[in-house]
Image (cartoon, rainbow, N blue to C red):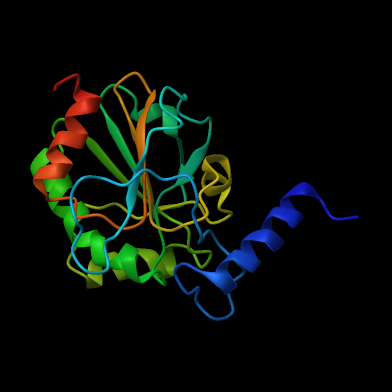
Length: 198
């Protein structure tokens, strides 16, 4: 008998075959296709055509731990205290890679007030992820890992990238499904929502 998780993996594998980022050959199926997203008012640059979703607003930060490049685990709750932008990505996902420099710029310019947390869904671990970020010259993004995709399952994230924004108390403000220009004027307005600004 298939477990619930095995059934989810099988369904996600089918979604990968139909739509979304092409997964790296040889890796098991990972999140790809999306449904209930609400479009933004602006047009994204080519390859960055995601949508904002408020349907989970107010949901608490999940009780999960992530692994850093040294293999140390840290609970997501440890990042409470200022707004937190959790970006799920993978090295094999083209829109993810396209938006990484923009997330790096956001971490550089807004890091004092917002924590940008990029969480790799690559199952190969730090031996691939850390050198990948370094090779792209991304100096402000840390190689956090979720190799079992537990966080993606928690979010029901069927598309990469998926980015979830929390306020300082750990309550979800919105999530963004698909690629986005994190240096845009639209982004500044979106982030203001988690800072208690209008």
